[in-house]
Length: 270
Image (cartoon, rainbow, N blue to C red; front, top):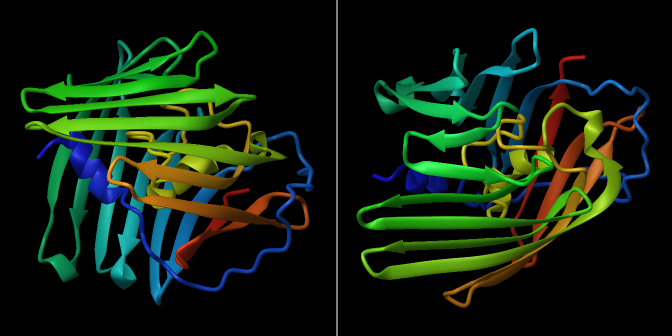
């Protein structure tokens, strides 16, 4: 199975429906410190389901491990980031759990540029950046598989994304546009828009946790999206952020126009 299709399956839209408290959509909180707070855990909840991502970092602030757990801990996936010399990175993925009767492991090999951004993944996917360090394209091509993604940035945020794939003569494409508030993403170490991308679907950035490996992060927090695909499917969603007493994001409620919704909760190390 193609790497990109594995990721798309993992990052598919999750139709979760829950209650999530929001007390501020405007992004008016300022954040009391100039130092970015470090995210230690992200929790997604809905329909009596809980999924968690826990993050570990090295002394340089780089992610060294991401642990995903679901099904009350009966299923897990661990990603180990091994940074080597000559701008090389290995990402070892291990999964298992009692609910699935064991597990498996595989390794993704990544080449980084001199800024630490991914440029080549498993000799299959290439990522390109503009002169400011923003991701502008990602593509993968094999004998019977082609995938191309382009990103349009404005004001430090992705405002439009175009996705196209072809396999054995069949093609699929979609276009998505995005809105933002004026809250600075610089107050946290991860790009929370990209963390959300696994669940909001249209904003797909391959191999990214919003950890800086795929270029500069968003300037602001996403508040809405529209999506139109080649198979005539359309959707819209709004994203409502709530903040703690110091102005840092603590929750994001995503509500689709078809009634689906889910909540993301952010926990911090400091």
